[in-house]
Length: 542
Ligand code: TEU
Image 1: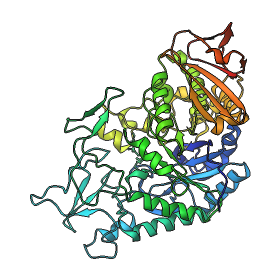
Image 2 (image 1 turned 90 degrees about the vertical axis):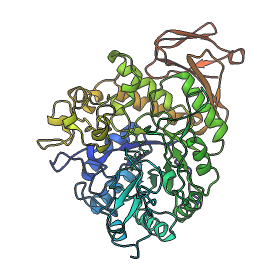
Image 3 (image 1 turned 120 degrees about the vertical axis):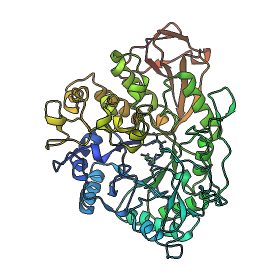
Image 4 (image 1 turned 60 degrees about the horizontal axis):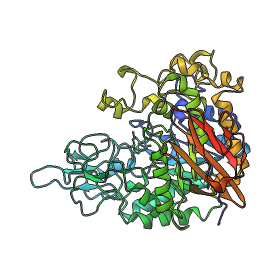
């Protein structure tokens, strides 16, 4: 079926199942817990949920290492729990998007267990196997994202297999059509279970360079300073193979054709590395025969800076004129944005509020990450608390991803803030998080939570914000001013992300403006000038 464009401009709420709500007392979240808490999600005014993986997994990478694509891991519950969760989500008007982690499997997946037994078994070619170089070393210089070489020796096959992430996450060989067929079957399994969409993990990693060519040092753009070559041989950026292989397009078309045999289903591909990512995103989302939209990493870094945001949005306008982007400030892989953006603890609420006000008026769809509606900061954890293998490996230079994965906080006074009725939690619940629990913020009209609801309602009330055009207005470097426009409605925004008051004289063409109340902010119009406080926004109908 052709379907509606519900995903275009949608607001998606990411749930990290392990940390959302426990109902069994084992200190780990589960699907029944999600069902129990969906009313909270719906109350925010979002359109959809995206669930991080809940599939059968040895959990080496917290579920991003799948050993059965068509089942629920017992720690999260059962397929029946999942069906019940979908019923409740749909009853509340929420679409359900699930993660598909198909670039690699777990090394405990039956496909890999079989593949590694010999060079001749039926699945021998389902993973990326290659002979060593004559001197016994790895076939190429490719590195793993999680550190070390991207190849692991297997003593039975006497070959190397390729992995972009952990050694226990072998890379599937997409060049083999049987692999594609098997993966499309798993997608069909979830389509038939009424899933509305898929977040495609590392969608630009699916194909490897079939010719196994060594990579040259990576060339990257150092934020305006031009292209530079990374010459540090130990750099994480170095020798990553160019993941964006042309063969992927044909696979994405097969995937889309399958989705289009159902009504209203969508895909959001994760495309996140470096300077090429927006080009890849455009390639994957232009036209209606590949992906619906892609998720980028551009706002997952440290920048809370008008110039940077203007640069990214302008690049998108130039590069992705017909495709569609999904933005996020936070997710389960990066430091929570409040911690990245604040300069002093006193700013925490204000920065949390301005961030959602900003991202919700940019052109694109958005993903929110559980807990950001409470203004949560990154949890500070001790080495002993860590569960993320990536953090354990690189501590203390990189502390890993556990600080954004701590349990959701529901009731300030309850043990473990209401996350579990049991005696332990898989990661600690910080006291300062508990103080910001949902029940506390529900009682406060000025809370970050109340601000999220008001802001998402504001977005819904103005069609120009959902998918209208976006045009920038000349300002000084510190301000971000733009209009959003659709069907005769034109809204003007002026954002001040700095810690100084700012004044901005409106261009003559905006002579008559009607200021609109942006919930929570204090900017005002004096004569023809917009006067903004530190971390403030002005909005008007023009
Ligand atoms: O992440 C893809 C990815 O590129 C990550 O390496 C990311 O750059 C890193 O986590 C940032 O700190 C996806 C998932 O979101 C992540 O949780 C998984 O570990 C990874 O794929 C492997 O499946």
